[in-house]
Amino acid sequence: MKSDDNARNNAVNPENYGYATGRIRALEAGLLSSADLSRVFDARQPEDISRVVQDKGYKSGDVEAALRDKMTETYEVMQQIIPDAAFVEALILFNDTHNLKVVLKHLSAWWIKKVEDTDQQVNIPESDGALTWHGLESAFRIPAIVEPEVLFRAIRDRNETVIPEWLWQLAEEGTAAWLRSYDTGSMDMVVDKGAWIRAMELTRMLNNQFFSGYMKLKQNLISLEILLRCRSLKTGREYLKQALPPVSSLTADEWMDAYEADSQDLLALVADKMNIGKWFSDARSILETYGKPGTAAAYNRIADQILADWLRGAASVLRGPEVPVSYLLRRELEIKNIRIALTCLRNGVSAAQARELARAAV
Image 1: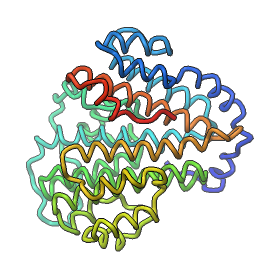
Image 2: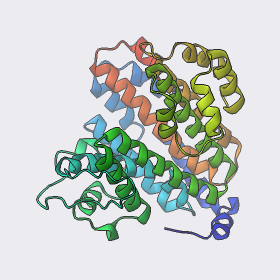
Image 3: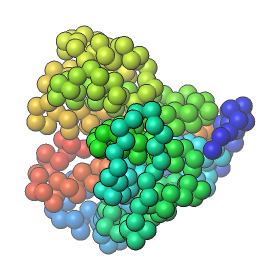
Image 4: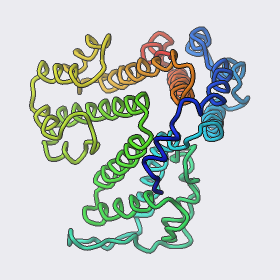
C-alpha cells in the first residue's frame, strides 16, 4: 500500500479532527480513574475485577474476554473517527507481525528443505492444505489488520492476494531466514525489523510531531532493552546489530559502542537521547543491575511510565490527532494494568507487590 506523501501530510490537519476530538472527550469518561484502578488491585478474586470494569463499560463474564473485546472495540472506534487511518495502522501492525511469526513457526515444522545459498531467492514452501489454525487461537493477538485465520490460510496456501503486500514480503523474508538457519530467533528478528520499517514509514508520512515523538521514544526504549539484554547475556556486538530496530535516534555505531560502555557512560547516553526525566534515578539502578531477578520487569515498568509521560502532552491539545491517538494508547495501558492485577491475583501475589508492577494511569 503506497500513499502520496503530500496528500498524507495535508490530511493530518487539526481542523479535520473536530468530530474525533469531541467523540473522544466523551469516551474518556469510560477510562478507569485512579480510584477504580485501586479497586482493581485490591480485588480478592477475578469476579471483583470483573465488577469494577463492568461499571466502566466492559462486558460481563470472563475478564480476559472482556479485555480483548474492549481493545477490539476501541480500535474499531478509532478506525471510524480518525480521518487518517495510518495512525491506527502504524500501531496495530505489530499485532499482525506477531501473528505472522506464530503462523510461520507453526508451518515451518513441515518445511524441511534447508537453503544453503544465501543469495538464492527463497519462496514460501508448500504446506499441507489440511493443516488448520485451530490450537493457535490463544497465541494470536487481536485486533489486527488481517484476521488471524485469513493470515494463516494465506501463508499456508501461498495466496499473497488476500493480505497487504508489505506483510507478504515479511512472510517471505521470515521464511528465508528460517530456511537458511533453522533458527526461529533469526526469523523473529527479520519480521520485527520489517515491522518497525513499516511503522516508521507510516509515521514519517503522517508528519505529526506528537506521534513521531511517541514512536521514536518507544523504539529507543525497545532498543535499550535489547542492548541491556545482549550485554547481560554477552551475545556479542554482531548479534546486537542484527537484533536492534533499524531506525533510531542513535546511530548503529553509538549502539555498538554502548555494548561495551561502562554503566556511567551508558547512563549519560540514555539521558542525552531519551526523555527519562524524573525516572533518571530508577533508570540508573536498572542500568547498573540489569540481568538480576526482577530487573527486566522493572525496566518494562519504567519504559511504560516514560511513554505515559509523553502521552500526557496530549491533554493540552484542543483538537487534532493527538487526542484520539492518546486515548487509544491510554486504553491499552489501562488494559495492561488490569491484566497485571489479574495475573498477580491468580498467582497469589500480594496486592502491595502487584501495585509495584502497575503502570501509572495517564
